[in-house]
View 1: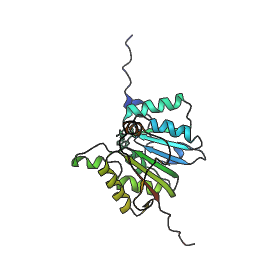
View 2: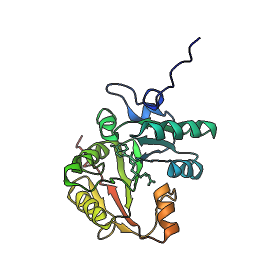
View 3: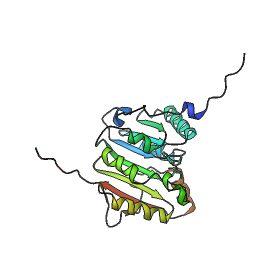
Length: 211
Ligand SMILES: C[S@@+](CC[C@H](N)C(=O)[O-])C[C@H]1O[C@@H](n2cnc3c(N)ncnc32)[C@H](O)[C@@H]1O
């Protein structure tokens, strides 16, 4: 009897539903909905899962190997309030249909591309923010951190220009990670004593419609 071929991570990584779907229905329940975008090896997902057992945590990663491994470990640890979705977060969120369901969003050390021709790959940009503006509750938190000062400037500018977000304080800069869940890159930067540039913005309140 021949042995079956090895299963590819692409085939076994957890995926979002096809077509249009309600994001909140992926992880039904009453707890606040949180997103962790591009979690890589998953340290921030595990730490947040223990810090916020009452939240529903949706974690997105484009690399199928990490999506599979982190989902597997969450299952082993009994984190039923975490769901991993593999794919381009921008494409997944664009297909969602709900409004004002997400309480907070974290993006740890995104966009490791330097070349101008890779600008389109950048996760934190208008496409993502437009989808999040629809999905986030009024006053919901959007947190992004990086070890690249120029990138932080770009995130501040992008958030400042977006009509549905407002930077916290003068320029959105904060000293500490507000949610306490540290990513692998963050842990390494702290260990190496490297600076981290953190930015926090809020989803502005929607205008009240008369009637
Ligand atoms: C530099 S790594 C940071 C990983 C982790 N957040 C950390 O801080 O250790 C950026 C991560 O974002 C993921 N990523 C890049 N583009 C993405 C996209 N469009 N959708 C989801 N994840 C994405 C990459 O695969 C990678 O794991």
